[in-house]
View 1: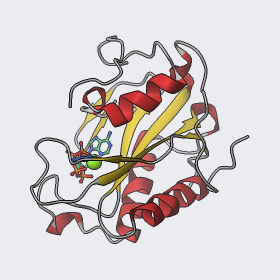
View 2 (view 1 turned 90 degrees about the vertical axis):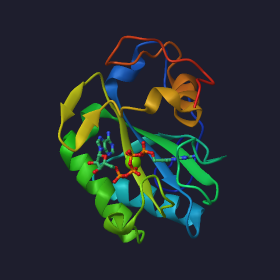
View 3 (view 1 turned 30 degrees about the vertical axis):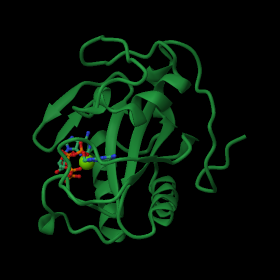
Length: 175
Ligand code: A4P
Ligand code: MG
């Protein structure tokens, strides 16, 4: 059984199509005590209404091509919560993630594009919702390209498709 906020568990979410009832966030950190930043984010998200019950093991990843040069490796992790138990809409969830980024010491206005950061919280999927408004696109526009995102998603929901295009996710998709 998963103990939300208290550690990480690699659980299976269910079969094909199961993903529509779930909301998925991706965490990333490559500055400071990365594991501590992720842990604080897990706790803060849960306390803020994102009652996650699935968490992938934190994975060390090299900066994606296009990232600012000279930065260290990331710790990335995925969290998933039941959409029906979520006390937040997509904008509220983005705001919660950004507040936690700030608490971790992130100062977005002083950053270079794709520079190092203590915490990044990305809204990856909100069930099968497709949303494009200024400052918020769901699904996250680049989630299909990132193996550290598609890998855990496929482990939880084999057969999951991109809600935007209907394309099936592929493990080890190109970065
Ligand atoms: N925004 C729009 N949609 C979303 C969404 N679904 N989730 C807006 C989160 N934010 C969303 O994000 C820029 C703007 O995107 C925000 O104002 C928000 O309103 P940001 O967090 O300020 O900056 P960012 O994260 O650097 O920008 P971006 O373009 O979202 O970058 P990504 O795609 O998050 O990639 N390498 C490794 N190994 N691991 C990583 O996690 N992450 C990045 C950043 C680069 N290289 C990486 C990793
Ligand atoms: Mg981001």
